[in-house]
Length: 175
Picture 1 (cartoon, rainbow, N blue to C red):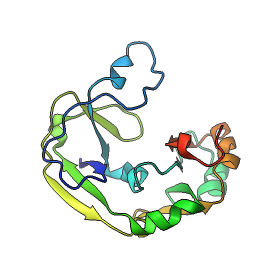
Picture 2: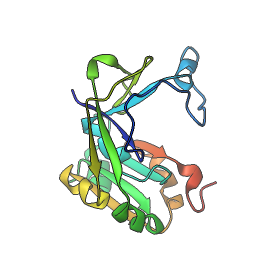
Picture 3: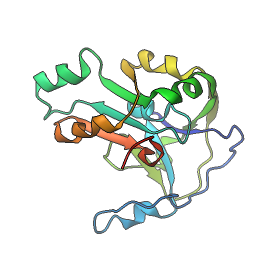
Picture 4: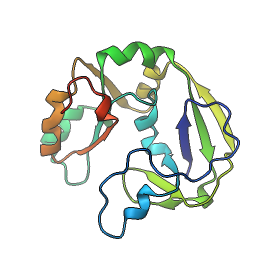
């Protein structure tokens, strides 16, 4: 299992646990997920973070409960799709992000969309600068879909696909 943390900072020698910037409503007994943690993503889901930090995006993929007709309708022959607003495309093509590989033994699996956490400081094993992020998706069999607005995609939450959203508060016309 390979785990990664993505950042725009190229000089992180040690990851210190810190609380999330914008706390989420958590189920009872999981409030600790807003507390001081180091976050990582597994290699299968790393495409969720191939974006500039504040870029709003919606990511979808099939689950075992997704009907084949729905999977074909939304994903065609891709394993996942990533939606991004058109005005972010230039930054996606131009910005550099840094992929830090993390020691898997320091993390616990949240069993949620490839997310892992550590409650203690973590020293990364390697850092790779990544450019032309728009070209990384095809390598992962993920279709990058550029749209004028993410708002019409609200209906995705009514499907039986897995739908993840990140930084929607930065989307142009998201309520």
